[in-house]
Length: 198
Image (tube, rainbow, N blue to C red; front, top):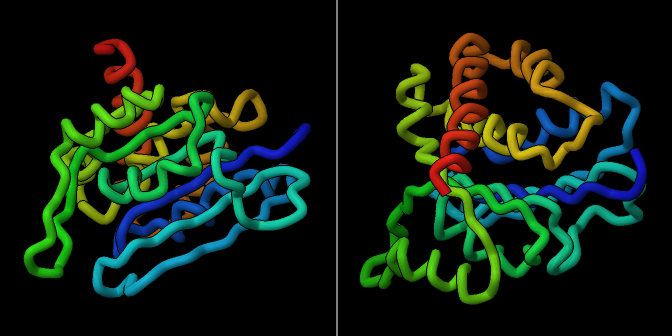
């Protein structure tokens, strides 16, 4: 692989962001490609913000520079926009369409339209997937991260280096493998459905 592929993953504690990063990392490591990962999180056990930087290729340091993400994958819409500063107009941005209300009282939440209008104003395109619903349909809400990974894999951001079967091989060794594989496939299809609707 030439250059560096930068993937920023974000969501809240309990959504499996770190597992998601490890799956991506293992797919490339198995092909002999260097992967650097760094995670930052707040009160992850209580639904705090979780961010994982995945740098694939010959990166010299683990953190993605601002505006340097090739893909931004968010498992919750507000968290996606919390880290939108890592995106540029070239970034593939895929987010769950759902928002989780913060546990703190009297916190004013932006609306989905407010967030998407902001993205449009600054020239960013955000593809929305109802990952939570698809995970339920796959058989377990804990497969939400695999739904979103499927959507990311369908985006083409990984190029020709890896394909869906590479991800399926790694996912098949996770707990709940049947459900997670089904969730991955549903997310993969969902992104194409969203693109067709645009």
